[in-house]
Image (cartoon, rainbow, N blue to C red; front, side, top):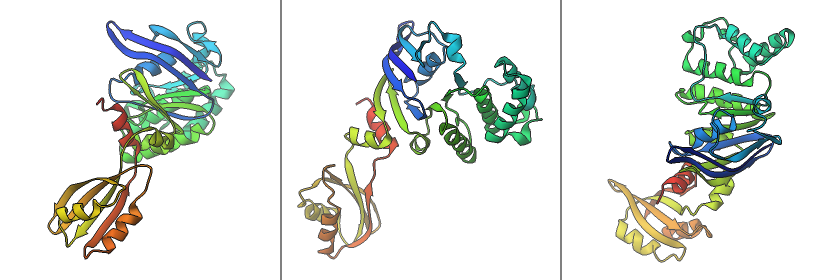
Length: 311
């Protein structure tokens, strides 16, 4: 559905996006992640036709964006980080205005506004001025705007930015529901949100794509070490290091902290082997008291930090 080849954008001498290649098939939610200044927003603005690339090509449904921009815009719904709303208008009047811009006939317009009000959870504020709405409701109105005309592709730039936890959950559920029928490209700084919502994650850093795949495939792609965290009593760190250091799978043992008599130790091990059983059996042979035993799982946050930390 979307095919990007060697996409590049310069701002004078600054290369914001550097020869990106990306293909997105129809359906599903693609998370677009990266640190501030990585090139996410610039890329999304080029995909919507808001910015012209310095070089490279964008094809959407076989159409070249440089030659068929208006046709492509009919396929897209776009929600920038700060929804561009006319705050002096009532919600209903604003969506009616957006429907007119989308050339939706009067009969279809009423139905479209009603359906979007239900989908985005804004029915109760339809006759309130946008200026009186909370940020969460404004984002919902912006999402309804992006959905007007039933576009095949939605591009959402930080749709939950600045929202409280309850509002984030609400917007996330709306996006999940929409993602069952449409192609969604979603940028976010909330990594747990991307992990919970997205079918695929693309990580961009310094203008380049540095990782692309499902969260599970990225866990295999990265070289992030594996750890076991244990909490012990009735021993000291040197003894723990000496005894557990005899296990061949353990690569390193570090003191993670000490709270009174409680000792917190972190064991690094090879990703090709899980030594938890051996560690437990070794501890059973001692007079130590085991208070906690947990394997540290790779999260999207760990993966993101490893890929983008620049060292």
